[in-house]
Length: 133
Image (cartoon, rainbow, N blue to C red; front, side, top):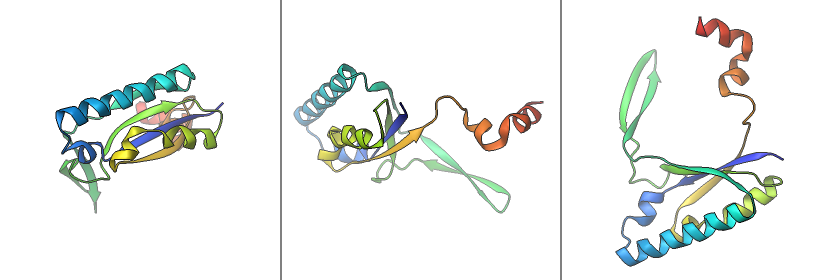
């Protein structure tokens, strides 16, 4: 069974104009959706990204820090859910029920490898040891 991450975009924009009642209703929808995922043993965990932060960019060997992540855009990543569906098609079906979609947000489904760290996959174990020393 593969693992997937559901990346949520546009959370702050989608909920920016919510009344207190709409916010409470949205929270209830999320709780119900998450309980459904848990009940199906499909949810590994979730992470909320804090709105404060920035990006580090490299432009012709100069490192530039840009304040952000610019929560006013619909492309801002607001959080993620780690899922254990049977396959990609089931991951898509689980994502379709995410309450964010009903409020103008979007999501991205990507397969993840929890067994091999990113640096090992990119550089190989040998180079990773060299980088650490």
